[in-house]
Image 1 (cartoon, rainbow, N blue to C red):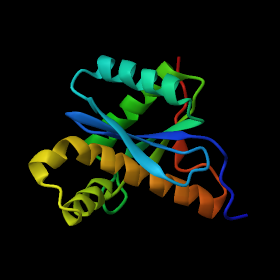
Image 2: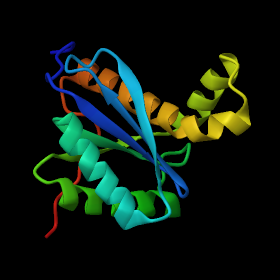
Image 3: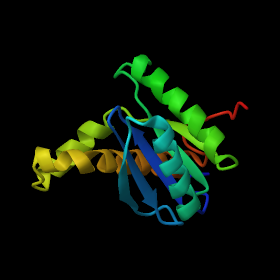
Amino acid sequence: MSGVLRRGRRLAVDVGDARIGVASCDPDGILATPVETVPGRDVPAAHRRLAALVEEYEPIEVVVGLPRSLKGGEGPAAVKVRGFAQELARTIAPVPVRLVDERMSTVTAAQGMRASGVRSKKGRAVIDQAAAVVILQSALESERASGDAPGEGVEVVI
């Protein structure tokens, strides 16, 4: 049953140490666009800002990029993102949070930005948003292809 996509806006989050890129898509899941870059060092403040964006955009779900090694393994960065996603799921419940493979999203975003002439100094602030767009597009394509929600759901542990 390919080509079936649940209707509704989604937010995607690219979690980095310093910055968190956020992207959104239209309710039909056709176009993913950058939203903003949230400062990432103050994690409670980042969660508050993301919760405000969830309130504003009213997504059917939030997809969080899970950094895996090229071989598919998970290292310290993935552990950190899983913890971040768990806390986010608690904060924004009942909106579901899903972890999706984000291998190469930042690399893909950086290549796209270089190709469009964006210089790296200026680009750092938007590279995280562009990576979130790549994550969201990948999640939408995955759902279209399989008919299933992308990635893995994050259980809300109270």
